[in-house]
Every structure is written in C-alpha cells, then in structure tokens.
Length: 169
Image (tube, rainbow, N blue to C red; front, side, top):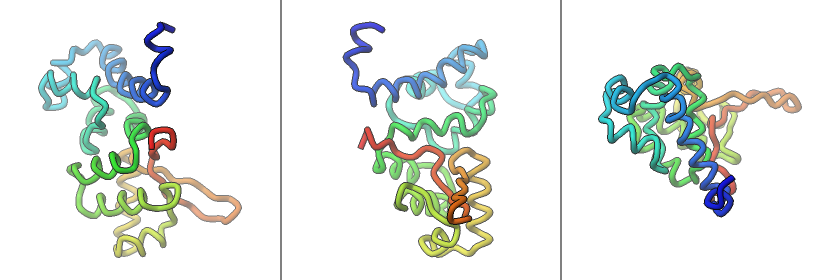
C-alpha cells in the first residue's frame, strides 16, 4: 500500500475501486477506451470520464456496459453504493428510464433502508399491481433491484441493488 493510498478516506478508496471495475474489465477484454466507446456509442473521452470520475453512469448505460464487457448486469450496480441518497436521486431522475421506472426507484430510495413490500410500492407510487410487478421484474433483470426474502415475516421485499452507503452520507 502506498502512502497516498494510506492517506485516503475509506469511502473515497472504495469509490475509486468501484470505478476501476469498468477499466479492469475493459482491459481484460483487450479493448482500448476508443474501442469500448465505439461499442457503446460513446466517445473515448466519455469512456475515460466513466472510468475516472466520481459520477455514476446513467441507468440505461449499465446494462450496455455489462453486455459489452460480459459482466453480470448487477455487477455494475456497485456504482451507486458510494453515492449518497441525493446523488442516487439525481442519477434516477437524469436517467433515460421510463417515468414509471423512475417513480418506482425513487419510492424505494425513500423507503426505510431502501427496501419495501410490493403492496407498499403500489401505495407509494399509485401504480397497479401488474404494472409494479412488471417494472420490478425488468429493473431486477437490469440489475437495479434485488429481491430479499424475510423468512420471519414470510414476505418478499424489493430493494435497490446498491443502497447508498451510510459511510458516505
């Protein structure tokens, strides 16, 4: 460990490790930033920012990156772990997700511990059961949500795949 690494805040070090995943995966695939950019429809400078800046990629970009780099879709949900709730909210609203997907993610973000039951999500969003189920299925496939089973209460909870870290709030 270098003296610079020892002096870093743990949250900053963790965020840097997260962003490094994209760079490492790109390098393992033998791609340059320019080549990855071409595959994603981005410029080389956009890929450079993606690999080095503290901001998270847009939600619609995560599955594309995962597909090109042959990573599980949820492997990139790490990007939000280092973000606080406000950064997550900005990320959600600036994304290219549908309005209902944004509404559902924002409702989860505002839920205690960023998780909720299906019925509560229906109440918080005003969306019907079928709509909430199809949205949660899609967002789970995209790696933005996960299902948790509460065996004690015998219920399934929906949660953000990467909740804001308590250490970065």
